[in-house]
Image (tube, rainbow, N blue to C red; front, side, top):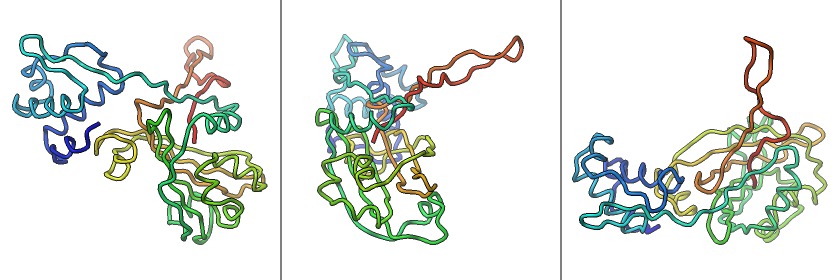
Length: 266
């Protein structure tokens, strides 16, 4: 994506909103490669804006190579090549994480030791803030970034591996190498918008929708050994949850099909 063109649409403007909406449709595959977009008038009506506003958004999409505009033939979508989205089975998460770490590359953006922020302290179950290693990485597939990961690990565990180790090996492998016996984790999934730094790292527009995942990992003693704050590009990552129909008669309902659920990778 052309970062300079993105800057040409200031945050909060209607044109930027239209641009982000159309871009997300293209990147997510909801609008197929070669498909013709509605006319400027129809787009203006559907987004509740003027044709001038729509035209500004389309100009930026064209500059980014996501559409082609030809007089008399309409606006054609030029969707980027498909990327296989990451999907992991919860029941075999550990070995899959190691395998994914061997197939992808990680770029270390920052590395430091500092006092745990309040939300990490609470999530880990600590009475007082602790010294933690804070590392931010971007994981890539074929040089395309798909996740922005910030991890918080207690200093007495993190001292067992180096900054270089973290830049070249999956964190789960390093934790296990440090003698940590991971037993369980609790994670929450939501959505958020990309801020300037994250947008730059992931190669998306500021304000783009991202999948947000927070996870607390615990060892055999129930102690928190890692807090993960992860942001994923929705065009590169998905959560899948197969469902099965259970129950009798009027009480039949959907439940997750245990053993088939897919999740994330770090």
